[in-house]
Image (tube, helix red, strand yellow):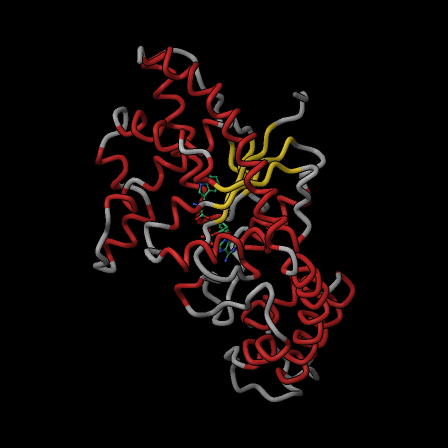
Length: 323
Ligand code: AMP
Ligand code: TRP
């Protein structure tokens, strides 16, 4: 045990990650793994709310593990594991269910959005924040790096910890979301939040062709090359902010405002910058892909360690409850 603060976060295995996931959350796992005692997992239980095919789920789970490794999550520093290797989170989820009201869960954005879209909402989706609270609280997390869309869920975990502590006595630490202002909502190719469900993503491990296609598809207005342009209204410029260095951004901004930079040139610069950023990640991922057996073994060993921590916490929780 160290006296470092505990960082915990997870990503659902539900398809390829995109650059919104990377800048909004995953990059922080890498950047903070020295400063914190880091624990990062693959949220496979959460994924079953939508992925209901065994082959697909286990493939996507391995994919997320490879993604983490490729971006630089280092298993010698970060406890990298699979959520379902810690089944105690479901046990804790039940206890949290019993101290949480339905109206409170009905205020969750994710639930309200699904309802507004008339989606069929399974009980797992409704209960999603409870399981997430269990993930966070069973590991005594201090900081939870996530994108803006998960902020409310971390606040729910904090509320549930407070409620539990009030009802059963002091048992849980109160976690905080860790959200970086400039990357809290990465826009997609249409200017809305980048999201798989909006079809506006640039995959984190995109091929050169995919990068080109995504950038070329960004809608722009019809202003000619020489016309002055407002960079703040342009979806291409919004993405430059994440891929160009300070000087280059300033130069692009100047040329937008003065006139002289057309959207075609702006897109070409963006394609080249994104490609330069993604190509080495893609190469690294290929290396890890060669040995999935080692990755499986690492997940298993780490899962056992994460479970041990959870079991110790769970016995304290059970004493608090009187189980
Ligand atoms: P998910 O794919 O829903 O499991 O999301 C994984 C992580 O990426 C979560 O912390 C999200 O908040 C974060 N995230 C997803 N989309 C974006 C985005 N467009 N901008 C910033 N963060 C995001
Ligand atoms: N809900 C998160 C997402 O969609 C994934 C997740 C599950 C998570 N449990 C968590 C994130 C605990 C942080 C902490 O991205």
